[in-house]
Length: 291
Image (cartoon, rainbow, N blue to C red; front, side, top):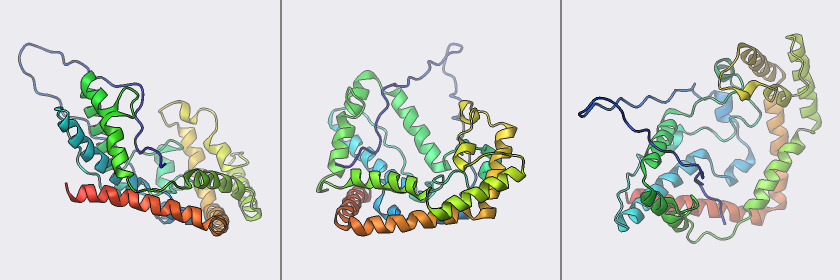
């Protein structure tokens, strides 16, 4: 069946005990999540044929909100209070291919290098609220909510409810094709030429990388939360050279051709997958509409 939306980590978080003088004290305000840059037009408009057969971040937010409501019903039936989180607007989610070809947005590169930018504001607030709620759960509440393995209890019941009437699908086939075609697209003749042009462009800036992956995965970038000046220099040049050589549009066009061919070969299986995802999302929206 379709995989879980929100598998729970085994490591659980605990609230720090408040300290101070005797008597009630005002609780300090929660820090605001950092706000990242607005998604660039190229990243927003970067679409591929397979996008229609996968669940977007916006879809997953909808399903997560519906699961949360169902979990509240389940927990209250067990005599346990459950704080339902505010809904998160799907339009605030990242587009599906924002980082598929590495960093492609000038502002993201200049502010964060190769580190991922902060989540969009509503998504960041949702994650922070969920983290705070889960940290406040006692052992009994946590077991009722998520079972002993983190993916049981009321969460499992809610997840199963949303999966009702969804047929077995070709999700494993889809995931395999998605990965294999991405790999194959890098060997497309046009993409190879564009990557060589990108490398030459980087070389003119005194930066010697054969591929964008070599630049983004260079040792040290993601070993520290701090973004270095050198990382920003490389990321800035990376994005500029991608634009100058039209690497992203060339790569996306090659991958799109391969995806369309795969869809033609596996029409029945992948249409079943698409139907299953649509039913799952419809089930979630039905729950939200009765909120």
